[in-house]
Length: 141
Image (cartoon, rainbow, N blue to C red):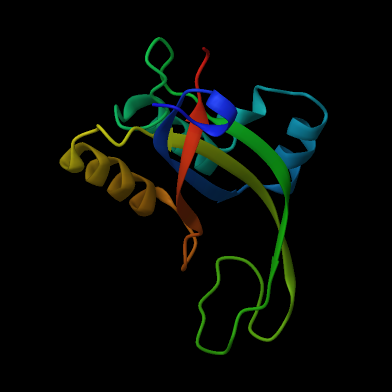
C-alpha cells in the first residue's frame, strides 16, 4: 500500500502502556542498568506479556518488539479514589516507564482480546493508563 510521498506503509494499532515502577528501578534504568527491566516486578510482568502474547510486538521477523520510555507521571487522586500511590487531594509524582508496542490489524480478535485482558489484569493502578491509537508504519521500498 502506498503511504506518504510514495513510501509504502501498513496499518497498525499502537499500544502504549504506562507502567509504575519503583524509584530505584527508574534510577537504575536511567543509569543504563538494563537488568532493572526484569528486577521491577510490575515492569517485568508487562514486558513478559508483550513478549509472550502473539498479537503484541509482531514485526514479522521480530517478535516482542517494544519501545521503552523513562519518566514520571503526575496526578491528584480525588476523595473517591483508592490510589496505590499518594493520597486524595495531593499531587503525586510516580516514576513511570512507558512501554509502546504494536498490534497487527490482521491478528485475530480473540488473540488481541486475550493480550489486552492480560495487560489490564496485571496493571496495578486503579485506573490503568493504556492507550490504543490507529496509525501507520513505514515499510522499506
